[in-house]
Image (cartoon, rainbow, N blue to C red; front, side, top):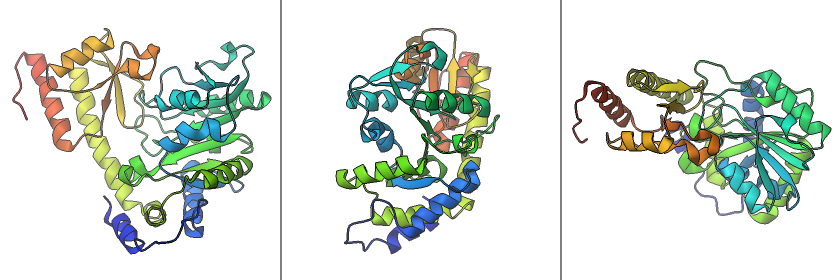
Length: 329
């Protein structure tokens, strides 16, 4: 944990009163400044702190009044919580990366995720603009999950907020879990259409979806400090370089994986066969089918293990090329 963030949490720990759902003035200003700098956004957007990004992803459909008879579009291969949130609202989820193929469905919400989980794919700005134009013609909201935005590797990611002429019907979700290693604090936020942000605030304050006051103070400190972000990014880069080289050396193909915390790899076989092959070598990965049927021939490697665990995986992959075993670590 960054010490500057831990100190802010300690200093704000005496917080017996109810926190503001909208966030303190200091937090709103810190989020707005970060969004302007990191996302290329211009004034006119609203901001709202969230209890991490996963909570908002799961609750966004019902917070927007989406329900039975409505359709929500999610990526063909994606984070499972998109579909879970749609099901909780009683709506219908459709997996599609091609909006023109959807036909007459009553689409109320379109999810995009760039950089993507699990693939690490980065969507180009022109694609994001086309999604927004398509959605606006139908009165649908575009929700862009950008929690890996600061972790671009071979391709720099673009925030949807920098691609539009207005923020109407556009929301961008961000998380400090990856940027600042704050997964345990549950710290995130949404930025975009001020009317939609106000609508979310009105519902969330009654639902008790409030970021605790000490965490809000920690978020202000995290958003105002770049040094720990650079250190964390360098740590992920080293792990990625080591693991990517080991996978290629072991005969894997790595697709997309241009940004984010994952390597989307395949041996050209069913993902469960790859899971078994790796498990025999003491390496645990996520099967691609966890993220949708289109992931059947891939597995997801995560860079979130410790340096020591990444090094052990690299050694075991190298040993597999020579036919040697591995020592349990």
